[in-house]
Structures are given as structure tokens and as C-alpha cells.
Image (cartoon, rainbow, N blue to C red; front, top):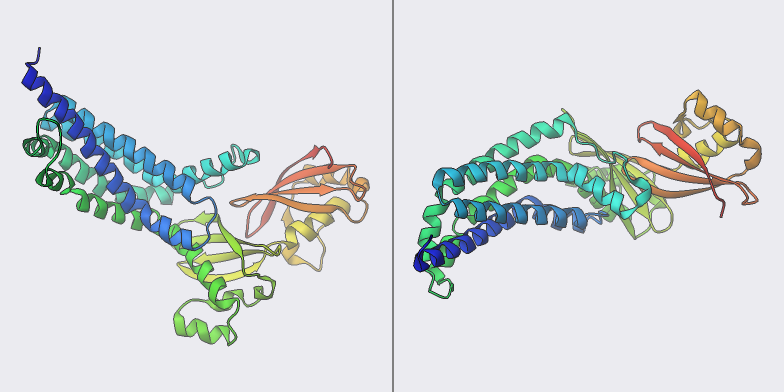
Length: 375
């Protein structure tokens, strides 16, 4: 049984441990995701903040749990092992949030996307995560070993009512710049490669859309390929939003960025090795190619950009319903989630409808179709 003074000291240690862990979790979250929150927010990226808030909450909870448990055991070795394990969990949260975290955000935002691997986690992403995780685990394990000594110093500067002095706050916050720095380092490995694409596309649209001079000359002057939007900038309007379409990490990172404009323009941009490659009208496979599949079962020969990869059973399923669409089906893009596009086709009279799910950027493929109620 603890004596009254010892019991009060133990309760104080638990409170300080919890407070310290929460501060560490918050500092790590700010280092990892503050650049995304600021830079991608300015780039008009959709569905950005829900996943970031989810990640911050996860790191706060894990940090608070780590600080509290380490204080409860009260031994340096136990504190180091606890923080070692929780740092590994934090690393998993950081590495998987740009993929499964964003996929979950999409699922919650639109139930029709539920279960789709919108942003799959790849082996290349795993390699980057392991490098970033090494530094996170190392620092937090060391802080766990030292937590008991830190809490003793903080507790000595805390009065009987639990109020912390200026020196106590200084000791509590002392390691946070290191934690924040490790978070920034993790951001450079995990998030930064995914952030480049939307930022380049945003800059190309923001500046190049209304630039009165030669885009090629501007590209040479500023080092951004504004000329990539030359073929589609007449379609663009002032208001737009961006969405990460697809991520292919490797020797030359490739990111597809989707730009939706309020005038109905729909543009895909390809970013390769942190350079904007080209932007093109995304609609032909869906508005012309899909219409041809519904009516004739074949892609128009004069429209190579309309190509759609379709299996023979899918082609036969569509052809069996071609008479219902006559020669002019009414097409609507219902949603896009990453590289997935959901299209709706209605008969001219509006008495029959199907919904088809497509996937891909370089080559669009038909995933599945189903009949739905018209209207």
C-alpha cells in the first residue's frame, strides 16, 4: 500500500506522463502533417483534412498512452520498451495514412466507394516507411528510457496543487523540437513525394491558365512545365479542385492528378520524377468511348484516346442492352475516387439505366456494370 505522500506523487507522475506523451504525439503529428495541411490546402486538394485529423488523433492517443503507461511502470527499461512498441504503431499510422487513411476518408464520404482499393499501399511505400520509422523509433525509445528522470525534474518544479512552474513547462517541452524535427524527416520520406504532384498542377493552372505570353518560355524561366496545360487551358475556368488520381512510386515516381473545374471541364495531369509531364482531357473514354460501347460494342477508330479495356463477357453484356440506348445514351459522371470513375448511362427516354465502374489513367478499363433504377 502506498503512503499518502507516495500515492500523491504517483498520481502526479501519471498526470505528467500523460501530459508528456500527449505533447510528444502532438509534436510528431505537426511535424509529419503540417506541411500537407498548409501546402496541399493551398492547392485545393479535396478530402484532405479528415484523414489528417484522423492521423493526429491517433498519434495523440498513442502518445498519451505511451506516456501514461511508462509512468505507471516507473522503470526506465519498461518505459523504453513501451515507447519502442508505440513508436512502431505511430510509424505505421504515419506511413499508411496517405493510402489506407485516404481510402477510408473516401469510403466515409461516399458509401458507393466502400471497399475499393482507392489508394493501395505499395512495396515502394513500405521501403520509404522503414527509413522514416527508424528515426522515429530510435528517438521515442530514448525518450522512453529517460522519461522517469524527466518526470522527476518536472515534478520537483510542480506545487502541491499540480500547477507547473515555468521551469517545469520548459522541461516538459524540451524534447519537442527534436520530435517535431523527426516528424519533418518522416514527412520528407512519406508525404513529400505525394505532395509534389498536386502542387505542380495547381501552380500550372493558377499561373498558366491566364498567362498572356508563351508558356514554353515561361516554363524555361521558372522551371515548371506550364506548357503541359497548353492543349487544355481553353477548357479551364477559374474555380477548380484537385484530387490525387493514382500513385506509382518507384525509380521515377509517377502521380496522376485530377482537376475538376466548375464549368464541367475534367482534366488529368501526369507528374513524373517531380516534373509536370502533360495534361489532357479526361472525358473521351467515358463520354465517347463508353457511348460507343453501349451502342455498337466497339471503340471509334478515329478516336484512339477513347480506348477502353473491356473483357468479352462485359462487351456481350453491354451489347445485349444496346437497343435500349438507341444511338444517343445520356451519360453522367457520378463520382471519381482516385483512379476509379463511376458513370451512369440512361436511355434517351429515361426509362432504363446502368451504372458502370471504370479504373485507370494510362489505359481505362471497365471493372463492372449493373442495372439501376432510372431517374
